[in-house]
Each structure stands twice: as C-alpha cells, then as structure tokens.
Amino acid sequence: MTNAPATDPAIAALSFEEALAELEKIVQRLESGSAPLEESISIYERGAALKGHCEARLEQARLRVEKVVLSQGSASGVEPADFS
Image 1 (cartoon, one colour):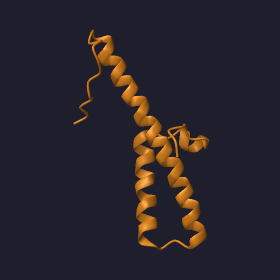
Image 2 (tube, helix red, strand yellow):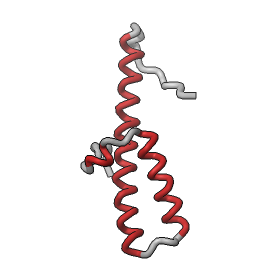
Image 3 (cartoon, rainbow, N blue to C red):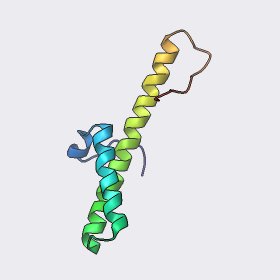
C-alpha cells in the first residue's frame, strides 16, 4: 500500500483520528478471530485502505510542519516535529 489518498469517499472524509480509531477496531476484530473468513477479508481490505489514508494524512502533516519551520527563517534544514 502506498501513501496515495483513499479512493473510498467515505474513508477520504475521515479525519486521521477517526480513521485510526476504526483501524484499531478492525485490528482487534481480526486478532480475536471472531469474524468469518469472508468478513475477515472484507474488513482487512477496509483496514488496508484506512492504513493508507492514515499514512497520507501523516505525510501531509509532516510537510506542513516542514513548511512552517522553513518559513520561520530556518532554511538550513528541517526540524523534527514534537507532538507531545
């Protein structure tokens, strides 16, 4: 899976936090082994799409942070973002 935006409009409309929460539920469901095979495949596919969406959102955030750092006169490089 690449960092391409989600092609499912419902997934594309999700915030990072919403997509991550849904992805966590999918992982829990798959790890529990309670879903039948066909449903497991279906939710795995949705999970893969959610993962790609989250990765794309994180990349967008990283680029925004770099832009802010560079626009503040520190053109010698980028600094890691501290999200804590």
